[in-house]
Image (cartoon, rainbow, N blue to C red):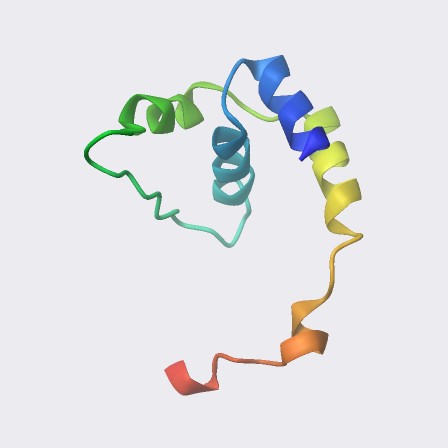
Length: 85
C-alpha cells in the first residue's frame, strides 16, 4: 500500500481512486464497477474524484513494479472462467 498511498498523496486523491484509475486505464477495460454504500459512509464524492486526475508514466512504473511481484493467478488457480462460457 505504500506505493499506491504515495501516488494518492501526490495527486491528492484516495488510494481507491488510484486503484480504479489504474484499472480503468487498461486497454481491455471498458468500465469498472465501484461500490458506493448508502448510509453512514457514502463515497460518492470520492469516487467522482477518480476522473479528475491522470496517472503519469512515473506512477505507472511504480505500480507495475509492485504488480510484477504478485502471484500469477492463472498458475495458482487456473482458468476459472469455464463456468461462464
